[in-house]
Length: 384
Image (cartoon, rainbow, N blue to C red):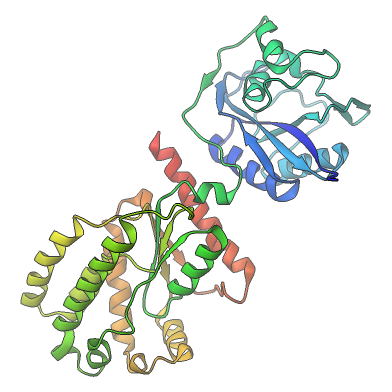
């Protein structure tokens, strides 16, 4: 029999990026306290009890093995980490985050440092309205009324505006809302390894570039000028066919798609390797194809310096890559950066990999996931 209890927590913010403050708090509460079961809509209201900026307010329900007092301790610690400074007798003030324990199952607790249900919840529309989203029929164990009735009976109801913003239960829930993430990078940057790790962890459909069977690739590394056009055209044909096959339909049993390349890399590499007249012909063909392929929701570029790229190329030991010149890698890096300058900012993410080893170090892997997470949350704000 499970010892888990359901806790209901109210969240508020009126300083900084209020949406991101709330969402980060939800993610952290899920990591520290237990699985987040439900999230409410976000409501905006004027500051109550003091002259301050408007608040965003929300509510979540969480399954937890912690006691009510332990949950409270986690809330206070997280508030502190997210920038709130509580002071004795401070009254009502602006705050980047405000976390309150509203209910802990049907428990009634009255202690010096903890009172559950929250003693003022029945007087606060900005608590009751989001609480009604996650627990509309939950009965107050003292007042013997459910959340909806408490809200309806509230006499003084300052205006509440429901925002077109969504709170996600956890990172996996957030990632599942996108359709397609592309992980790109220079030769040896680690994009395929990272793509595998993300696909495994988040149950994503894996789209990998096929290149080992290309007959022109070993010849190209030995004689670039002779085999460049044949190589780039064969890559383009392969990538176009694969993209149309692999990204045109979703796998019903997968959350999203993640690839270790984007078809636009064809144009990037072609511009580096082809003569001017060859490139102009190539670009005309490419533009026709590019109109038809799926574009990624987020384009992640793993930036790695040339020295590290050469080390990793040597380490993975592909014979036909061992003669790649540093100047070639530097040119490819520059071409990617030029491309990203013209890419929609809300969809592009550059991660500096120079001091990261995401295979050996879980912390470095989490750093990358945090960066993707932040980009996806930024996109939520641009949708509004």
